[in-house]
Image (cartoon, rainbow, N blue to C red; front, side):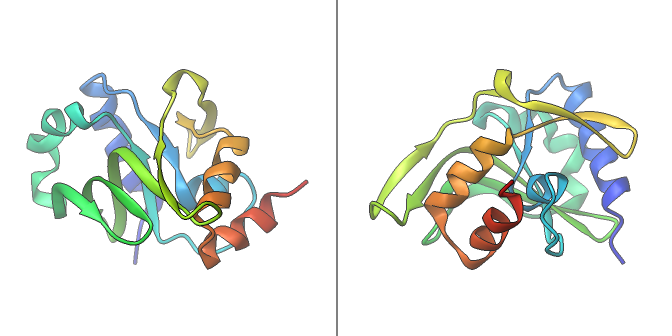
Length: 153
């Protein structure tokens, strides 16, 4: 059984202790904004240069990476952790495949524009709703379409 609360508090405490800028995005962010689909993982953006800073703290929980990961949707540095049954995907600077224009585009993260939300008693930076919808509208996977529909006013 996964413990999302424990996993979020654990990784956020590590990121804070290393003074790493980060942002929650993906399905967890969509859930925070009202999507009702089941949570698969906690997606967290960081700078590529910050992976090395946390390796000592997370090495026993790594199930992938850190390494470059590319598939039909994503091209980024990725490290996947599993903590108390909850998967956590930590990603660096990314490119996504824009289905509308059939090309790769940079998915820039401006950490100064994150929303701050209280989740499980801690305040964390979360991708702004409009930015979340914008990148999901480029990816257009089935889960993205479902999230977009759930997030419309």
